Structures are given as C-alpha cells and as structure tokens.
Length: 276
Image (cartoon, rainbow, N blue to C red; front, top):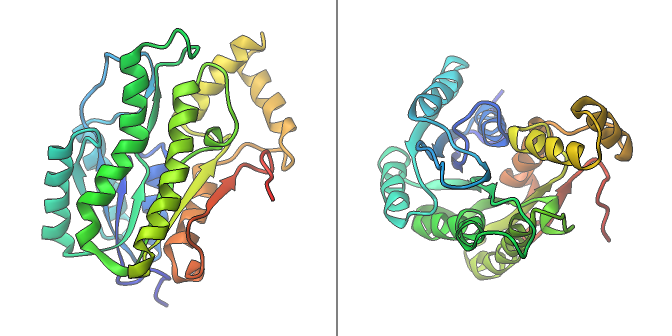
C-alpha cells in the first residue's frame, strides 16, 4: 500500500539533528512515501547567548543515513537561512536532485538573546528576526519557482507567537511576525493553489523546550523534574508534547487531506492555548 505522500518531494529546514521536531517531520513525511531533502546549519554560532539550534556536518550526514537505513528516500544539504548565498546554493542542490518541490517546511529557528526587552543586545534582537522570520522568507522566495502548483508550505511558528513570555521577547515577537507572514503568503500564492499554513507548538520535548523549562524552573524555585511535572499538570491533556505530535499535524498539512486549508496557524499545545 502506498503512502499518502507517494511521489512527493519535500524540503525541511532545521532538521539536521535527530532529537528535534525537524527530524520527526522528515521521518513522518518520508514514511508516507515522500523524498525528503534535509537542510540545516552546520556551523557553530557561539556569539549569541541563549538557545540557537545548530548541528554539525556529521549530524546532518547521520540524520540522512538514519532515514536511508529505514528504506526512506532522503538527501541532505547545508544551509544558513540568514545567508542568501547559502540559501541559493541549497536551492540549486534541491533543483539538481529533485527537480521540483511539493512540500516546503520552514522549520529552522531558535531563541538567541534571552533577556528582558530593555536589556537585550540589539544584535541578538535582530538575529532573532533574521533566523525566525527572514529565514523563512528567504527560503520560500528562493524555492518558489521549484514549487509545483498545489504545493504545501508549512511554517514552524510557536505558541510564543500568540502568548507573550517574559525574557523571550525577541522570540515571541519574531514568531508572531511569522504567523502574519504565513497569512500574506497564503493570499499571494493562492493563485497557484499553493497552501501556506503555520504550526504553533507549545510544551514539546525538544532541546529548545527543555532549555526553556530549565530557565523557568529556576525562576519558580523548583527542581527541573518537579517543574516538568507541574507544567504537565497545568495542561488540559496532562502531558508534555512530543516531536511526533507536531509532525503528525505537519503531515496533515502537507497532504491532500488539508486541501481546503490555508492561511491558518494551528496550535499543538495539549489544550494550553484554545482559540475561537
């Protein structure tokens, strides 16, 4: 029996590490028959305080190999979504190996410069937008001519783009901007029947999630495990989310099952955020 994405080709940015949401998405899409191109940053960014998700070239190679060992179609390409030349080079690799694209997942992101709004360094503030907003803009524009009519674009935003969080002002504000950019792209690309949606994860078991929980545990004067239990009990579904929970929603948005859905920002929060 063929998968829901048989014959489709997908590009997922920020998917170089096997511990993150990006890899879970790549594995889910590939498991449904898609050929996936995994792209990620392969150089350290030590100048920024806070969480910036990076992988090495060996991480990217291992991630691609892990999918191939499962019998899935996977390729890898290095990319820095804050660098237009790097993105153009990645787009050339995509065109050479895949020809065109049916799915684009703008997953690359991070939270550099954790601080109050008044104390954050300007470089960290600007880099947050360069990474979380401008990166998705650059990648989408660079591969737009490769996207087949009727393609699906999924942008990885966050619950933080809808609900403010102290000390994460740059992250929250940039993710909110990504939600609006999703809507504008949805309008403008509708002429080609290209759907554009975003996903807004909440408390998900990732490196970024655990890093944030550690900071909040200190602020609430709780141990890490104690804070995790308290946090889970605050959620209506009484558990923390997993990368697969997010990947399942991305799979739905990438498939024809969501063919009448565009311009939406879907919460994956265990009920932590409920909207009309």
